[in-house]
Image (cartoon, rainbow, N blue to C red):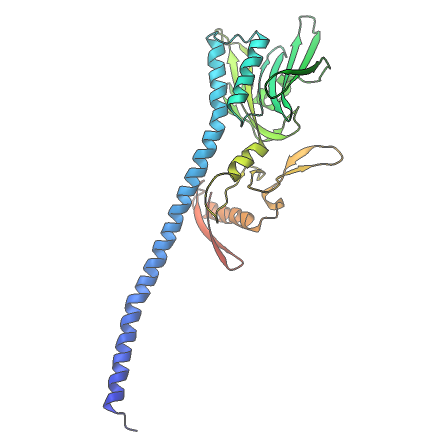
Amino acid sequence: MKISLKTVLIFCFTAIITITILSTTLPSYYTSKNIMSKHAHEIMDNISAFAIDKSKSYMNSAVDAVKLTEKLASQKILDKTNNKAMELYFFEQLQLNDAFSAMYFGKENGDFIMVLRNKNGFMSRFISNDEKNNRHVETIFYDKSFKLIKQNNVNRKYDPRERPWYKLAQKNKELIWTDPYVFFTLKQPGITTATPFYNKEGTLQGVLGVDIEISKLSQFIANLKISKNSKVFIIDKSLKIVTFPNLKTIQVDEETLKTRLLKIDEINDAVALKSYTGYLDQYNKNERKKESTFSFKLENKKYFAKF
């Protein structure tokens, strides 16, 4: 069989063009792929840094309020023995910080003063104990302008010294954050930052605390302007969901009315669960690094994640 010169030339030119295209596009493809992958990781780093920074700022407002109150009381600018002055101060702090659910001071003798936010406005509670262990409880309800609505003297079985925030601050002898727990009065899960208060002799006088509801923190996280296809959530060490955007993470037992936080494998979000199991794989492979950026596939879609 004879092959014409024209056919040979066409074949050769076609082969040369094909080889040239492959030699330029393949490296370009892999280079572009690597660049895009690197860019995606950089975006993840920026998103994570932004979310963490905003969350810290949100929560540090409670820390600042506690530290300021402790300093004012230490310097006797704020009289912690004057219940009405403390009540007004706590109210002003709640007005300035929408994130706060309540602010309070529990004393070593069991005395307690608190102002909390409720659906109608505010509620104050004063608990006092005299030398004969006689107990007096006063609860006052205010509207949103702090105008009196009503008050009562119904006794409440409440001892601040038995609450997790008091015990933890007393034990650590410094400012603390609690794990999520259910607030005594509001019956809502939340977290508390608290600091112990000592006199000049180093004797514990009491503990100052500020509450932040989980729902408020979840709402804050959901409102972060991150990106259309991104999601940020917070879990604690026991895998309980602290915050998750636009998803119910709290379960109430209908019989006991006890509240608990759902765990990551109970919220019916396959991507979140896969991201966490992917993090565990990275954690075990990479010398147990606490911070990890990685990718994973789920239902033929590729995701990037950062913990």
